[in-house]
Image (tube, rainbow, N blue to C red; front, side, top):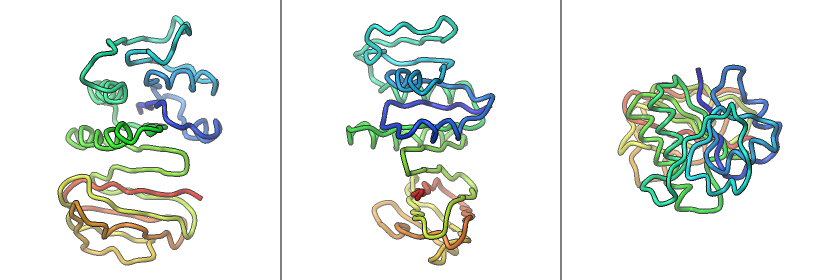
Length: 207
């Protein structure tokens, strides 16, 4: 089963999310993400956070609620991710993790370290961008000319192999603090990326 975290960032068009969802997905609304989910016609299985963004809205009885105090050490996004990781879902999709605050957006991106430590694949989707956490290998599907960027989440990523990309990726190693993997492109409709050691972030800009 896959966990889908519904964030409180910019959602974009409703059909973008509906297209991504699977029948047995477990929907976790992250605080204010519930209101956006409700407007999109979705009924989350769980709402988690301090619930300060829900105001006086009443939640359906079948929706599980885990409420935390407003003053806490974790953000609502981290609480949602920790719940999904603790339940050991085989895969996690985090929709709309980034909003208007740079600090929270960067913090959510770095939270992928927690999933990587447990060897659980996670994908983030924010409007036209999809971010994949690569632990071994992935296939990226898209259109010719779309941007693909590679960034190390771990200190180094070793022996990166890529096919279906404009610029050759073979036995490539990336280190934090450099921009070596930015702005590659799809040459067809699919690219395959493999790594030998480390944690890699693949950024795909959909047209």
